[in-house]
Structure formats: structure tokens, C-alpha cells
Amino acid sequence: MPFYLRTGKRMATRRSEIAIQFKAVPHSMFAGRGGLLQPNMLIIRLQPEEYIQLLVMAKEPGLDREGVRLREVPLNLSMDAEFAGSRRRIAYERLLLDLIEGDQTLFVRRDEVEAQWTWIDAIREGWKANAMKPKSYASGSWGPSAAIALTERDGVTWQDD
Image 1 (tube, rainbow, N blue to C red):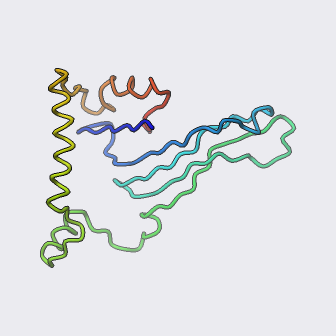
Image 2 (image 1 turned 180 degrees about the vertical axis):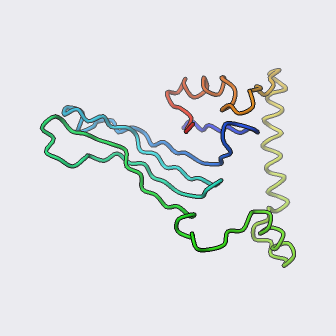
């Protein structure tokens, strides 16, 4: 299962999200009638606006005399829309208040931090062993061109919208 992680500073937009593209179905019952079926996708946006979106392919209603028409339909859960009337706290405001009140719920434990550094150190050691350095990229871009080549070899693309 290919897993891609792209991170950087000063990229084209400030965004943290997880995009899961499901496998294409092996056989489309609409293929013989002109329907182009794309894989479904689940997007979990963490910031700047929090939402969960499931993009599914749906058949457009109609008699289909000129072929079946399929299109991507979003199913959305937007935290901004659902809690529009509530005051939203910025992340550091919430953490500082929790710190003052002694609530450790949103804090990372020491063993979790150590596990994260173990993972990162292994990556850095791999770079060193293979004489590799992180690729540079222009400010305001979506990252180095090598990131595009990385996904293209598996026939997928980044969600650059």
C-alpha cells in the first residue's frame, strides 16, 4: 500500500490533511454505456478549516439515452459549518488554558515524543547512509519536482487544489 507524506514550510497553501484514495473497482457496470468511473476518496482536513469529505461516484439521474453520466459527489461534514455559532479557540489558547488548569488530555507524553524522534532519526540515518539531502523548492510552490515524480511512478497525484 503506497503511503505518501509531503511536508514543508511556505508551500502554495497552508494545509494539513489526509487524503485516502480507494482502489478502482476491477469492473465497472457502466463502462459499456460510456460511464467513466473514478476511485472514491476520503479527505480529512485538519487545518485551516476542519472537515471530513467523502467523494463518491454517482450516476446522474436521467434516461441515459446518450450514455450513462457519472460524476463525483461530495458528502461533507464541516466543523466550521456545524459549529458556526460557537466561539472557536486558537490552538495555543486552548493548550495554554489546559496547562494552567492541569489538563494533560491534548499534551503528548514523553514516550510518544521519543518514539517520534526514533522514527525521524531512522529517516535521517537513511539519508546519511545514501548521501541524500532533502530537496529544496521555491517558496509558494507545492514542493520539489521530485515529489511529483514520486507519485507519478505509482499513477497517483497530490491533492493540489
